[in-house]
View 1 (tube, rainbow, N blue to C red):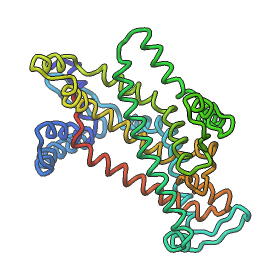
View 2: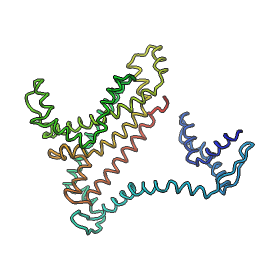
View 3: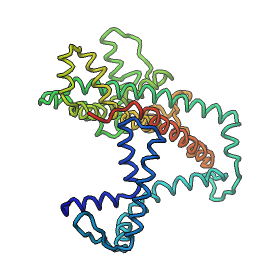
View 4: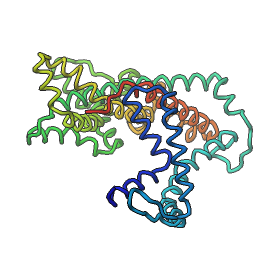
Length: 367
């Protein structure tokens, strides 16, 4: 065994048990192995690896083939950890500490109008699930949020995939078209909201003026009607996000080998059959990624609602994040807002984890 191979072996061995676990798991998943077979194969190798690690933990040398490798002293392992410590502390400070503080506030009666507060136990949670006003507004916000999320995912992923197919040729005219479609991604959502407020104004908006030219004389109240207000927000967020999905799908499409299409053409497959049985399965990892990211961003929508409708008319566009904002800064009830925020966090966590678990079996990672 060459010295380079010995060093690579040592690096692989030092990848810890998690690295070994992933290596074994990939081997067995490719053979459609059961969980019992997975653990039966991993356990002996894991024990052997642990014995080797503990045997050489004090920096002694080890022999691989005909070569002797001196392991680094243990003090260097602490220096490696200290290198990552600032990033870990920053993550704890901006992510985990706010979550812990949110949990603490949910057990108080803290209002923005007062510096003093006291702990009230489960009173806020009881209000969340029993008070008529809470159940009414919470149910309405969840319904609006899920409706918006469903259609926004359809718009972004559907049009993104269609445009990726339409503009996948690597020529200058197609590159210019892709740049124009992707350009709204660079514009802040608040700026886009102000532009769309002017475009969809009932009296002097550009959209209604254009509809007059094609024979629609009655002006549509885009932002004053509850159903049309949500449609207007979907148009805005779709225009803003389709370009991103198009570019991600485009990179995935260009990564699919042409051999699949050539072989299927020789077998007499049509374009629709190639798309159904080749393109879609090989795009499944990209689709899963876009689905999860678009789902989370859609569930957390706030800026477009705040700028264009303010949750109105009559709470028809009041999504969950805007409902939390209204509780905290309009009603001055930080305690109730924290309870709703925690519930929303749990809902997102459960749906995201369930989606990844269910869809992972149908995702093909080989192109």
